[in-house]
Length: 161
Image (tube, rainbow, N blue to C red):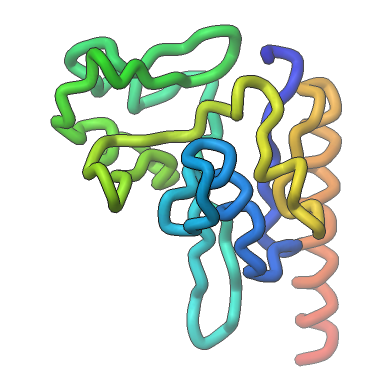
């Protein structure tokens, strides 16, 4: 898994929630967006949608905060050993991205496990808002996303001027 990473581009997200349903179906065999390890947040009144999930950070604060070692890094992925987790939820507070959630059915801590190396959220996303890309391509993709945002901002400034 180390050769690929998840890229999230909120500007491409339409709020369709396919990512949430694909995730919940993969993990629980049911289409229940509340149980997906990715959650799409809607910002009102702008109608902006933001997919929120574990980004499998290079230096994960959640792993540092976990007192039992239930969260650990393996092959570039931040994983959760539910057998060791004591549900203290310190990881929820430590993650700056909201990438760790509590399952609404079991009340247990859950997080993205990259679906074993084939993240269904990225596979099923119809707009490319969530992508599973080679790490060497990721920096180019991040730069493209940043350039597009800057171009939109410049356009707004010119229009307002």
